Length: 120
Length: 109
Image (cartoon, rainbow over all chains, first blue to last red; front, top):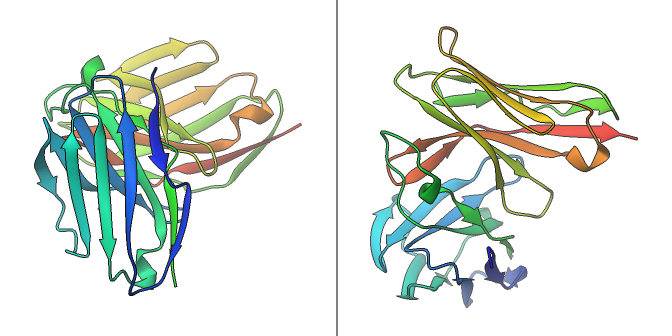
């Protein structure tokens, strides 16, 4: 099984709502990521978890709150979002974290299909 | 200057054409590069990765790095309508991937 599963596929929420995005992988990967992708733009990293601990927060606003309950699951809790937060939210996993120095096969990222989020 | 840059396209070609997709990069210290393919409403998937300079071939796909000009290329032979997607070049950063802007490819039957 080489899948990263994200739910829901689509989400529409108001600016006062609280919602959560979910991501699951069963490949035994120990690194998990949240990326945000606006239309016609490349994915931008938001958070990285390594061994269930937050490793990177790319200065993401606090209205986005990540959670890694166990090595297979990654959540993104959303609260008081703005319309400009509308985007495709991608979850990814890799066996290990990438190194600036070299690329290794176990650093290959597997992406889910994403959650298309619309904030009204 | 962005670390990795691509022409956003779209690049439109007829079926069977040879496609050339290109990226430029800014830092000569970068050694590894990847090509990801992203279909509409899907996450990116890794196509190929290359190291330093030279060519790497996988089926209809060839990846090429020219260190002297800081140029990365992906060639697709005998292009198919199923190759229609956005192609992103990327390099590994510390604990993350750094993507180029992506080039949208349209292959018409």
